[in-house]
Length: 193
Image 1 (cartoon, one colour):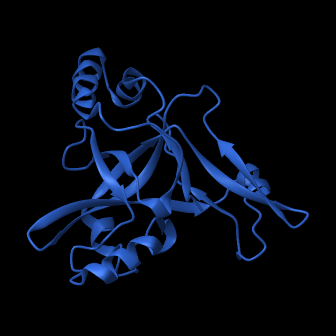
Image 2 (cartoon, helix red, strand yellow; image 1 turned 60 degrees about the vertical axis):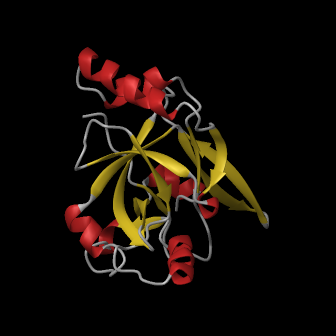
């Protein structure tokens, strides 16, 4: 699972280059990112604190935006229940996103790329939990599959996101070995292509 991330610790140029198709689009993305200069870097952010994550949505694929981590479905009416649900919708199991009511519409219509620097998985050994920081070998920003939602309550619109997870690959299965889970999981990491 993915409940802790590191994000926005690199130069904005690195995020722009990771997403851009050419030099001109990289410059445009970097310029857009400069509009968010006030957002602090997240060196180890828990999803349960609902930080804003850098996303590129299917509606604006080259425009960087920041959405709150913890998806709230558009149909949620009660604010208290929405907050409670957002603690449970940090991740979306890729195998069931078209079945679960919280993710179904977003999976069909509102997909995004979530850009982070790394994520943390917890390894269990000797009765202790040890956090492992997972990053790309070249330390470039990492792109994860995500789902996003637009939730409006009392005339205020909030944009939220969930990270799509999948079964762990062999390396991640060794790290994410929680004995309480039926199988190891990991975020769905997308290749640059």
